[in-house]
Image (cartoon, rainbow, N blue to C red):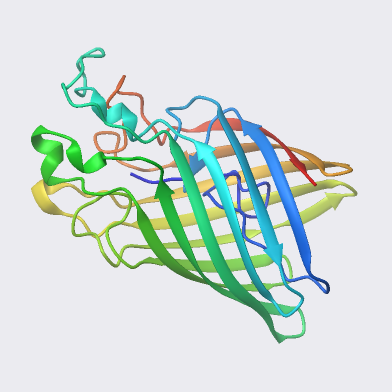
Length: 268
């Protein structure tokens, strides 16, 4: 199962955490917002429903940064229900309604208008006990908490990024080494309006029981900056994720379906 956010380049509505950008001075910033659906790497983390989000970022003038970001989620707790049962509980109470991302890294110039970003990201699903899922799921899911390292290169408006899981990815047992590659761009089409196209490929190193959880995703976001820290965005998402794998156990909703997400964020 995957996570997490606002798009990385347009309010992080595409995959999860807010990564600090290199700045000439040391800064401390906060952000809070709401989205009509929390999509991360194209997959809904909130069962196609609204989520509340917020974070804090510290960026040092040297290029080092740390931060934390959190969002409400539903995909872990939904495993308390038997798939395609119309809401029948399994008898095991699966908990974990909050995703907390903790990250840090270093951003530096490679050449004129070319920067590199390297870092570490911890997805902490607060209080989760996903490994307690019963039946067939017991042989698929372990602890949802995930550690990734990433590197990204930005040239002008275009960013290429690769993330690598140091252990199991979002609870999939024996999925160490799974990776996510994404390519995105950010264009200001008119003052205060920007467009962010994105494509990505999530590979999941789990093939037991015929499960192939890898997929591609795409999105395009339009963002409006109202000034004074207030921004809104409208993002259209789509994936080719397998519905039999990426569906909610609560109501069998397909979590990778095509659809639009509206977001509002305030930074201060």
